Length: 155
Image (cartoon, rainbow, N blue to C red; front, side, top):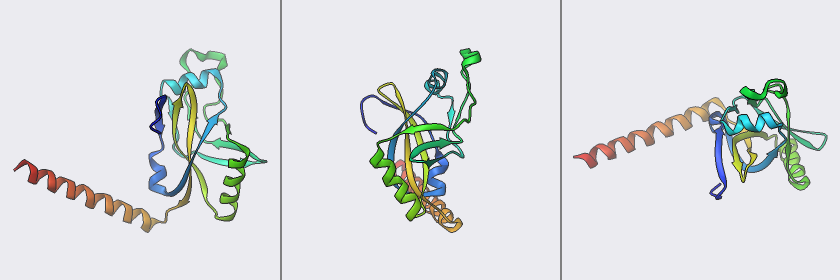
């Protein structure tokens, strides 16, 4: 995502905690005018959202975009199901992965690329409780090592 016109708006922090992300994809989002204005203000939440393929089309479910303050009657339901835009070959590949391997499509972040809202989707396998604990323990150990090295450098 090191492209010149890319700005991350919101991240799904729980995604990496709850899933092993195997592969990532980028998709466009079909939005209304007031929704894109809210996204530009950073008023979007990916928590508890997921993507699903239905009749050959890709949809994001549970993504919350707060109503635009000046939007009045043009505002739509904040958690409505929104269509995602991807090439047919990519959707077919994702369909195969989700059906055969039992993987889940999780939105990882929303970003603006050249003025267009895009969602980064991760193809992930759910972590078990002990996996989450192991990840937590590893993170804690790395934090302790960094802290000790920092203390030694100040002496």
